[in-house]
Length: 89
Image (cartoon, rainbow, N blue to C red):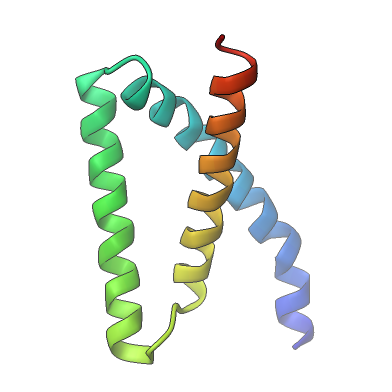
C-alpha cells in the first residue's frame, strides 16, 4: 500500500498535464468550432470510452487507468467551463 501512496503525487502531475492539454482542445473544438480540434477531441473521447468499456467488461468497474481517465475528463470539463465562462466573455 505504501507504493501506491508514493505514486499519488505523480498521478496528480499527470492529470494536471493532461488537463493542460485537453482544455485548449475542448475550447477550440466547442467554442471556436475548429474541425481539427473537434476531430482530436472525438478521437480522445472514443479512446477513453474504449478503455472504460474494456475495464467494465473485464473487472465490472473502472480500473486504475479508467479512474485516471475519469478524473482527467472531470477536471478538464470543470476547468474548460470555468475558463469559457469567466475568461472568454
